[in-house]
Image 1 (cartoon, rainbow, N blue to C red):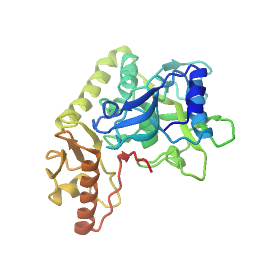
Image 2 (cartoon, rainbow, N blue to C red):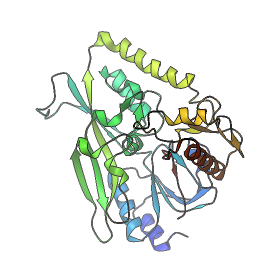
Image 3 (cartoon, one colour):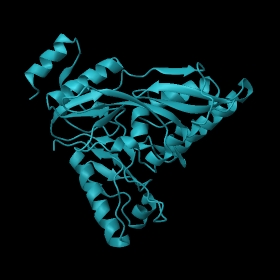
Image 4 (cartoon, rainbow, N blue to C red):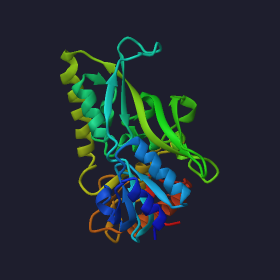
Amino acid sequence: MINDFLLHSFDIAKISYKKDFPLAPKSTFKVGSTADLFIAPISQEQLISVVSACIAAEEKFFILGGGSNIVFPDQPYHGIIISTENLNNILMTDDERPQNLEENQILVSCQAGTPMSSLVNFCTKHNLSGIEEFAGLPGTVGGALYMNARCFEKSISQLVYDTSFFTVQPKKRATIICQPFQESEWDYKKSPFQTNNNDEAKKIICSATFVLEQKDDKEHASIEAKCKHFINERIEKGHFKFPSAGSVFKNNHNFGKPSGVLIDQAGLKGVKIGGAQIAPFHGNFIINVDHAKSDDIKELVELTKRTIKEKFGFDLENEIIFLTNQ
């Protein structure tokens, strides 16, 4: 049950919210029950206010982007889902151009809730190259940053110029920070935003600025063709055949074989539990084939981990996130 005083404060601030909100439609897996409260702030200031209020009231909350890497629980989530879906502005500016940019480099800034598809389309329209590998990637810019999304051997961090985020701690005002890209803070599927444990301030992504390469009009068709190529690659690999969250496990490059190959070699492709299945066409996908429950997906994940550990002595690491009431 959400604190009545907190709801009253939202009412006074004219912050819209919805109670007992169905979560499955907000997930590419299409699973999950309801959330006690769902809020989609309409501005950065409102996002900060909502997060600050949740922390002050000691209410559990989860920041939701495009829902493309999340498994919502089968039981009602007793907390607040804060969606960035309304924070989706994109801006290309040449004002106060930084001296460290090359002549053909352009900066594009966008808010955390911007769909990756919108960012790719914006860049294509303006003949900006460098982000084509992310064409067809579901989810938002904030989610891609949080996971340091990697597509076709390219990580989103390779394009980052800076990020803007705020930190909130109990009994302290939110602090907005603009952080220039620092390579040491990023790694394969790792970002500085994944360190939200109980011992430090939570980092909530507001926006990011990316470095793209400006091309001339005659290269527009080439940029467009590259985007279509990567979208077709995803289609051919079965990314859109069934509800899923894409890759379930991270790859370990030191081990030498992708996780999907190990799962295939272990004979797990096609294995079903309930309505969830390890995709027959891709070992590192779990798909929702028949009204799957999040528990079905979780059991398949655990089965896969145990099997790979027994056969190869290798510990798979989750890429997808299971939201729980713990």
